[in-house]
Length: 462
Image 1 (cartoon, helix red, strand yellow):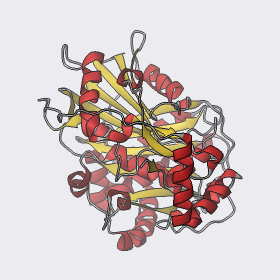
Image 2 (tube, rainbow, N blue to C red):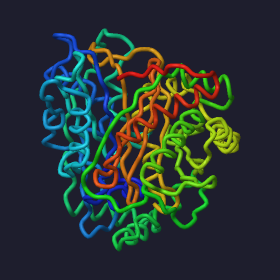
Image 3 (cartoon, helix red, strand yellow):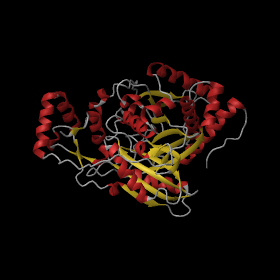
Image 4 (cartoon, one colour):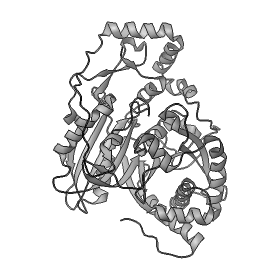
């Protein structure tokens, strides 16, 4: 029997539009070594490891008349080379050129006639590096039946382990008659599911899945008036920020709270000068309501590892220490009930957690009313030891969190091997000054450090 999408998974298809494609991305940088990982070897690596994530060989089939949610069926013409693509930057291959390429690729929706994922090998990055850019539709990754492909191609050693023996052959796809019969059978067994589908078909997808997100309790108020709440277009911008984990730890040790509290304080401290640079009135009471997906302890499956809450970032507070204290107080109330999982425990639970957990966090945000918050910030801890893909060492990992309707910016953070890597994903027209915000992130950490330890020089990766 074909595997039917859940109501939540289906919602990511129904709410998708040309201006809000529902795919999550990840940009990872690797050290280039001759003969280690080129396009041919990457294709082989993914072809070998894809047996761990069979969803990546399946495509969607719609039910005639939309009598039920779509189903996953084996792609009988699956060709891994269609999904694993190759690109190169023009010399000198700067990070700005790489970010521009990422923005263009992330602006394009995935082709629903094929399995909903792509991986790009980007060669010629300055510093003798190359990049892997992945795109995966949110309907695919639920943390239980499917995880992000990055989790199965990364290893903790530069020695490539053997792949599972597989004799996979695509199963015959169901006929239209079989699809309809299966939908009617499910409707008899679960009559409320048919009601949900009808509601989605007439444009009520977001409301229909509201009850499915039982893990989120947010006080919904009229949307804030700020530059982040605007109609978005089809094109994107992307930029990255590199910070040192030791700097965030130093702030935490001096002022308390958690690494996540410090990260959110950096974001709040950056938004303040960015708003002022735009001529926006910022008072002591100014806040930016932010959705903060958080890794939490779960009892049944990986999907329960992500919960979320809304937090009013105190961007109007000029004192960086007081900003941190206010954020730590608010997050502390949530953490008492959520039992957040530490970085080491998270890695032990689900391997290289960040790609999958950023996707699960984005799923939470996409299923909520866009008026309940202005910004999404996902922060997922990663391992503090090196990882490798096909023998090539991973140097950095930047999340790319999708934009939802009327949200011009999303921010993803991943800590890995001593670094904290931020991916800033934004609407191209609404955020022409994204680089200004990125620089403000660096300055915000410097401000926190100086407020806790006195003037010092902040070392960041260029």
